[in-house]
Length: 117
Image (tube, rainbow, N blue to C red; front, side):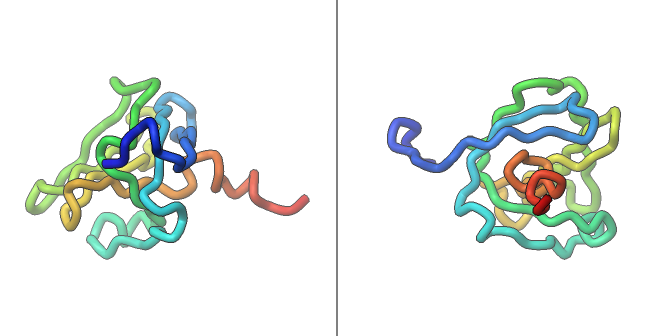
């Protein structure tokens, strides 16, 4: 993990749809890490995930509303808001030292904020 005092990566604010769950994060390499996971759950939900190290996400509000879903090997941990159902992030099975973060959950990439008016 990068030394906090010398970490020049931006800190993003993120939230689920209803705003109950809020978290801050730093991405490992910005949007260059964007990908679609090919596990059965991610294929069905169609989310694009970007990468963050485990220590680079801090839930700032609504931790009690985060629900956990695991299946098959129960290694990956998929978190979502228990009120609105939006997937927020998941601890990866393929890289357990990282989270995959719903790319449109953080303010910088929200579609309504990046559209040209």
